[in-house]
Image (cartoon, rainbow, N blue to C red; front, side, top):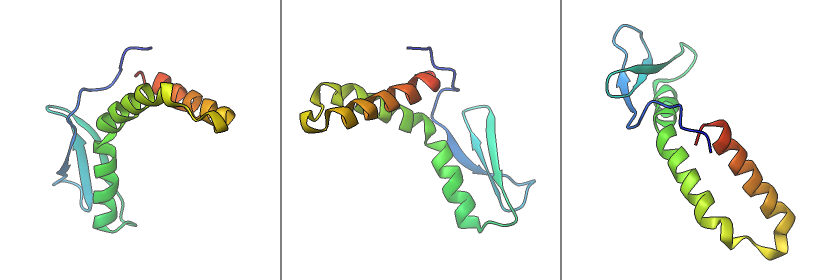
Length: 97
């Protein structure tokens, strides 16, 4: 599996004082992204930023779930199960996990 290319978590959501109706996603010492739109409500911007900030944890959970569930495949849905695992593995590979 490829080595992770991501800034280490924990990522957090902060206000962006210089940009109205926006939130920053930041690591310890780096601004990773800004979510901003005059078309979205503040709670929508907050929700999007929170989802983005959870990316490192979601990747970790997906990796753990994939590795844990691999031997527990459903025999009655073998083709669908194999495809789901292949899709999860592809996402993990693409994301450097």
